[in-house]
Image (cartoon, rainbow, N blue to C red; front, side, top):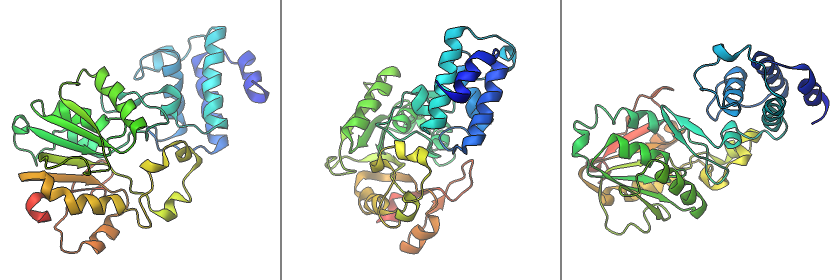
Length: 300
């Protein structure tokens, strides 16, 4: 360590000291917070608590606790990596949180942050009347497998096919499926969207596909450059993957099946491209512009 970080290792003692130091450094560096935390304070608290193996929801009781020499080194090291390398916090801790669920992640997969997760935690209510009646779910572009795992919990009698083009991503997904003991219900499939699914049909298809348009990809904060490019950009207008999904989803849905897709900030472009499709825009924490639903009959 050098400079401020070397000085801090000698002068800072308590969790409160390191929290203040981290917030100052994060703000000074102008870090971007879009991978789980919303600001410097939340991210600093998370990284410190995780590094010290403390409960993530209980900061106050430990604020005046003194750190040992090795703990000081570990905490400063993770703060320094976040500042100097701009690595997203989830890659530093190998943990991504969606509600009460925790998933292993590394740079082979995008950091999970899908609004579809919120909907699955609510079992897609009110659009699914009886979750126990759902027998099959498809998760396209599964990445870390997080949405497939959430779907398996939401629909306890369903088999879930989790599809991704990247074998590296599927290796991460396999670890998470193992962690949740869902190997008998979540099937990992290496495929370019529907390409290798044959005639398989599903009650629900969900997807958080790549959807960043070319102009936005060119100006992404440095933190995003650590994520797989394959999982971010999707053509000039960000809709290349979504177009394929819309073209083929109907033939893979059961008669009363539904399609749910997240498309980022592309609602206006999507509706302009498909003026005859009766999109239903679902309410999530950020509003009703990011996730759409279509019934199979809508797609015919």
